[in-house]
Length: 424
Ligand SMILES: Cc1ncc(COP(=O)(O)O)c(C=O)c1O
Image 1 (cartoon, rainbow, N blue to C red):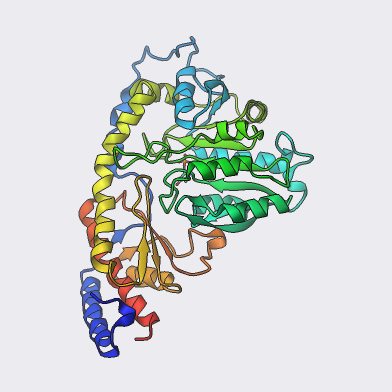
Image 2 (cartoon, rainbow, N blue to C red):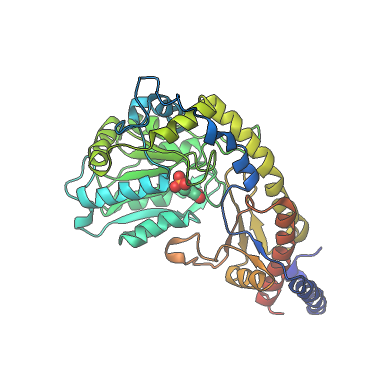
């Protein structure tokens, strides 16, 4: 097919009529498809169903003799810390296991910094107006934390190898109000980008005007590979230590999309100074996390290798859905010159870029035809995509046939919105 922009006016009119016919046919089907939720499917959750019975009535002691039924164990059971140590890339002594949500740990880390500062701060971050760098498109809930707490967000572009480093370095070196940066360094939400070793090195080594600048390193998709050949991510804690900025990065992760979403186990890892600071605060916040849940996870996965091999079963379920999305995009949009999309090797999303100014219209058209997409703009700070072109596609949750049906609708919507934009 010829690129849409190169079609004659008559051919465009014919194509528009044909697409409108198809669109009306979709509408008439009364579809109810939801592509908004980056959640595991029921089949994925089923893979860990035995986790709920992984403990017998007599099984409550951790390897160090801790009774998991009782208070205490602020930083986690040794065997749970060992698993996260490998997942997050830190010695076990530099891991703190939390509750069920890494997002909550990120939120609390930000709020503590606003109230008390972090090691190296002259004063609490909240004493002055502060800013975070937000590579975009990115994770809406990171941006929501900033917006909720009045932290100004600075949008920086995301390239194939990670954030636009020239821009990040320029900003961080020149503005002491910049205290943080959100990073989803592996299979980024929503683009699937994995930061290159060089980007990790530059983030670790760059000059920061604020001595207490922090990388909020959300490694949410650390083991969420779709293929046997996986993207490699350099160890940010090692890179920071080597660059003489040992306290710069705080690494977060959880088993939300490994065991149960919202009922898994979360953890953070960082330098000894940051970990001591986290423990000081969390000792005020709680007498200890849910160690029975930790023990269930440890019994079920056994060790980090067990967890990684469990993720291969997730990949089997997820891969066909991701491939259906990219196959249908290639089939319907491949030669049209009106869209670009990612082909991620892992994570939970495919990111679709339309022509500038078309994303909200595509989302609206799809909605009217019974396909719910994540709101346009959601992947940018303040919900505003300056080019109105990015759409986050979440293929994990619906069954494969529904993913295919939804994408058939989406491509028709992209073509229609593009034709209208191009002046038909
Ligand atoms: C990048 C990223 N971080 C964190 C989370 C949430 O993690 P948790 O369930 O551990 O709070 C998600 C969930 O979609 C995510 O995409």
